[in-house]
Amino acid sequence: VSGAKKAKTDKDDNNTNGLATCRMLLAELEAHQDAWPFLTPVNHKAVPGYRKVIKKPMDFSTIREKLTNNQYLNLETFIVDVNLVFENCERFNEDDSEIGRAGHRMRSFFDKRWTELLK
Ligand SMILES: CO[C@H](O)CCc1ccc(O)cc1
Image 1 (cartoon, helix red, strand yellow):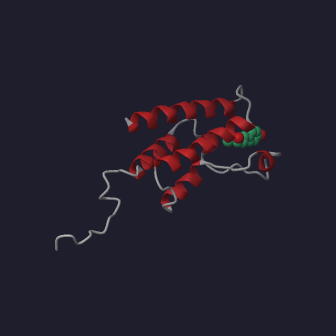
Image 2: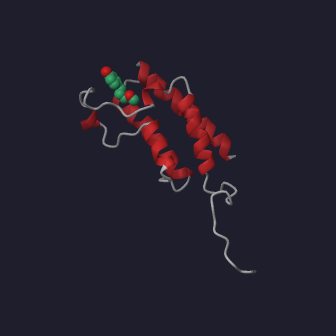
Image 3: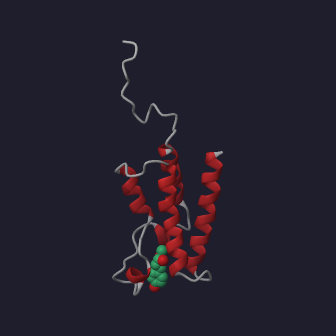
């Protein structure tokens, strides 16, 4: 029937809200050799000061959970959480430390990839 509205599914979007791009980017972040500090939530019971200093903890497994639960509206809200991982890392770790350097390498990898994919 003409005019009958078709139920929209994300298969219908030509990836307009970028969720396929989020899945692609997160898979690359999780697979990166420098991802190890960021794969799971920091154990704030084992890391003195972490809970006090870092107001909004974030890690790749939490982002994976949110993506699976459809909690990201679009690529932008996803990028906010990924950047939070790197901001927390810079706040808590010296630039000249193993984890600090891993964070900088992961941030520049991510920045390069999402800007490439968005072009
Ligand atoms: C993403 O890693 C967190 O910034 C915690 C870093 C950390 C954990 C334990 C330590 O002894 C030192 C740094």
